[in-house]
Length: 114
Length: 112
Image (cartoon, rainbow over all chains, first blue to last red; front, side, top):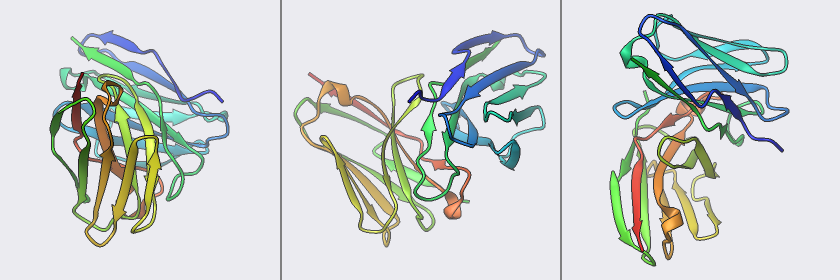
């Protein structure tokens, strides 16, 4: 069973640009959530999608957005990049979320904004 | 909002030694997940604890959940260099079904 796949693994962008990250969940998993990891703030929840609907969003500005496709693959987009957006972006998939359901994480996308 | 505090922040042990990492929650724990992370990489699932008093083991790693103390511990027996990495605890805040709140992590170094 393939794991959670995130592409690309590394990305370098310039301030002001936009970026799109991709996450393919484990087959059969309908929930995909995104996290930002930085040395200062640790892991912070961005948003979660379930069956193509955004169920919840964390405390991030509107520059951060996402979507989920009918095959459960998800993308997140960051517009007007800032230096502070440099981070490891992780996605996690689970069957439906909630107690008792494990969250499997991908290897992450390392975004560097210069 | 729920906060998870991990202790210690970092730990250096000699190969073969036992060690314990703690994760304390500011609010009621409805479940607790332990993950391991190599620097700059994804999180590797270790264990999931759902009920107070629950204890799970996998190879040389044992995790316990003390619901009353709002705390979980991760114990490694006879540590090996392969155990080195960052250990993170995560919990669903308020029993959330869509996200996890994480501790800041414990950096474990195992010297051969």
